[in-house]
Every structure is written in structure tokens, then in C-alpha cells.
Image (cartoon, rainbow, N blue to C red; front, side, top):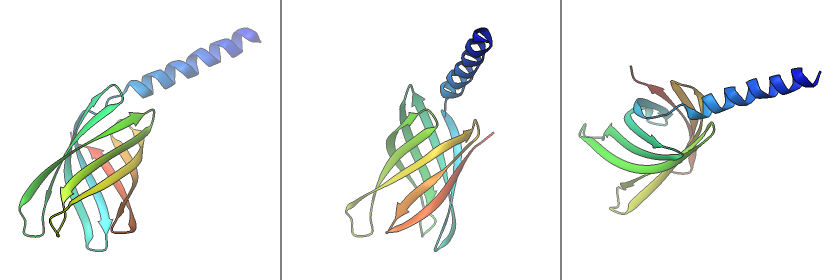
Length: 126
């Protein structure tokens, strides 16, 4: 019985270690549904250990593509990153995204924008 328990524990921990080792590094598409409709952004994640560097590219209201950078962390399946951009009033506006890794190609989470909580989903580009 002890052998079965130990073996089960080893298999479980090996699976967790493999899952935790999966890297988010790569190109992603982030989709949010807001009061203004669906918004998509291209994302580039670069993960080094638990540190995450983020580049977000999206079209502004006038169609011009803007690029903003941010940083974050990955702890197990939990992901958090912040992007700082210039607001309409010219002041910096920081938005923090929190989520969970669903699988190697999907992250889902929530972000608070202008006092509204919005769901987001990122899918890895192929």
C-alpha cells in the first residue's frame, strides 16, 4: 500500500512540475468583450522563470496601432501582468490583468477597466 501511495505521489508531482515548466513565451491574441464590443490585441509574452515581459499591440479609436509594454509574473497556473498606457487626459493609466493558464494554448482571466470587471481570453497564435 505504501508503494502505491508513494508511486501515486511521484506521478502527481511529476505532472505538476511538467505543467509548471510550460512557458508562455510566444505570440498570443487577447480578446475582451467590453461595452464597446469585442476588442482584440496582439500580445507577445516572454517568460523567464516566473517573470513575464509583455508587449501589447492594438488598434486605437482612429485605427492607429499602438504598442505598450508591461511586466508580470507566472506562479504555477496563476498569471498576472500590468500594462501602462497614456490615458485620454495624458496621464499614465495602469491596467492589471489576472488569470489562469487553462492549457498550453489558453489563458483566461479578468481585468478591471474604468470600474468595470471584464473577462478576457488569450489564445496562443500558431
